[in-house]
Length: 440
Image 1 (cartoon, rainbow, N blue to C red):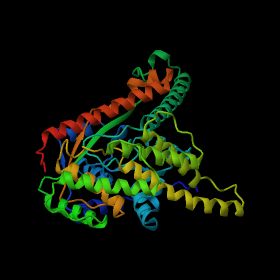
Image 2: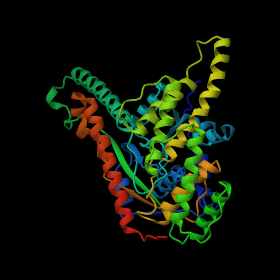
Image 3: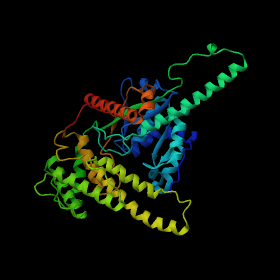
């Protein structure tokens, strides 16, 4: 059922969350702290009171808390947009908190009109910045980002259109008033070329690091996984050797689960890719979805997830009671397919050699966390105290693309999305170069 969850900003809860943030970071997030790069707060402050969508990379489930922490330092609170399903976590308790801290829902890929209207309203009013994670999925990787969805740019351009309409309406009213007062057109106040305040997209980058040695914790994770998969614990083996053995065992298990036999004489990377494609194509057949030939796996995931969301959150107001019962039965089955998609995303950027080519603590932790999510279930906790590096890029003024948008909407959206991707990628690389790296 498409039941929109609107934001219910509650000032007292914003204050309460701010006061309790240090305790939450210390205990619930295992000693997580933030390190804001030089000049980042100043760049962010330039857009205070402006119509702004903030777009950070999305590598970790704690990104919203990190954004909130940054907001405390910047002296601002934000609105957030989140996938509809997260509002149902913990029997709705999670959703209650999210809504009262300024978050609202969106059903990805659906014509979620209420969500779109809320986004346009928040951006056009400009009272608070809006945070949206343009990757659309938690990437679970620190060094790079996944290809971005186009929604951030498209929604921002729609808000620009609303602002232009308001400016045109206001201009008409001014002309009427001038006419009544006998003023000439030359007496009107001059405006800039655009004629109204533009919308900005603010790129941001988060990089999770472990400043201290976490090798002991990582070995404990390896041991737990080896025991769970029925392997002999190899205390003397290297991280790379043990991880590769775990990956081989896990891959063979999943191949049997999906009744999939890889082609002969292929590498582990080939086997992982073939299995991902097999899972997605099999699900596409079940859902009667045609996947674009030669398309990226992540795009396929988004198409299939959107199909599931469309069905699960379908508007039931015109259904009979019997139709609702039939829909509910099928909905239970459809919800199980999310696990298949999450499984593909979990391993979509991991390959044989991912650790050996750059065996930092963070990369090893990333791979083990993915394996723990698959084998142990649930969310894997941090492996130690983390320091999250935060940078703010140069804002993207959509006014610079407005004339192009009016001529070619798709091209304008693509250019802004590509620029956002490049800016976040640049910041991640620069932050990595500035930190002390621990190799294992």
